[in-house]
Length: 304
Ligand SMILES: Nc1nc2c(ncn2[C@@H]2O[C@H](COP(=O)(O)OP(=O)(O)OP(=O)(O)O)[C@@H](O)[C@H]2O)c(=O)[nH]1
Image (spheres, rainbow, N blue to C red):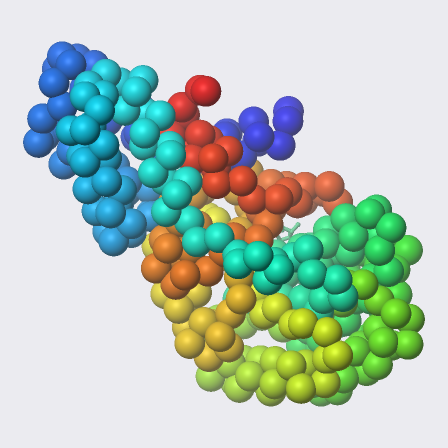
């Protein structure tokens, strides 16, 4: 199955709702009436994209349909996809993952996929001929260090690690020293995850981000790794991390799971953060660039 089909399968819950909504239009004839718009707005909200993004999309669509008389289901679907895609925040030129050298600090709640994403990022960059250093700053969970070691071994990249319980900020410091010595293009730091409500975690991460931002000789991006299957709670999580750490972007994992998926849009739109990558499986190659149009097509089931 291609990665797009996996993402599509993962987003099937949302897609069925969208199709029901659009079918109402087909059955009720070509006129787009208020019920249709209400139904569509509700469907958008149900996909977890949040009321603000949903209202914006529907208002823009009403405007387009009035100007262009797009009163048939396929045309409406195309406009819907475009509006969803345009609602995502995009990274400013020169401020995305293509910066070189770059230090990525991956943060997020436990189990969101940080360690796996760090490994996939390392493999991808190494495959593109880059020098990569991984930093195992998740010193909270012993298995996380071993897991990252395994990813480093698979991709043949340097890893900086210390024993469980060490100070994560010192691991970061050492990682940046090693990265400088090796002339690394990409540094990826894996951090510990606990509940976003953990004050300890936020304090620890604030220390880590401040050390990394001060010490790094290259741009630093603090990136939230979020599990797409988290649903609406994902927005609360993202807001907590953003308030504490001033995030630069988001990586959405497990889009191959049974996600509603709209949460990616809610976070990107409401917090003004670009989606930098998406995870569509557990394998080393299951990390993809985010394409807002592909995402909108998979979410709505529009076949272009
Ligand atoms: N299906 C699927 N599973 C994923 C994806 N990304 C990560 N996982 C799985 O999610 C689980 C948790 O991933 P980890 O990388 O260990 O998560 P973590 O955020 O480092 O966890 P903590 O160290 O506890 O904070 C693992 O079983 C991964 O294989 C994805 O895109 N799709």
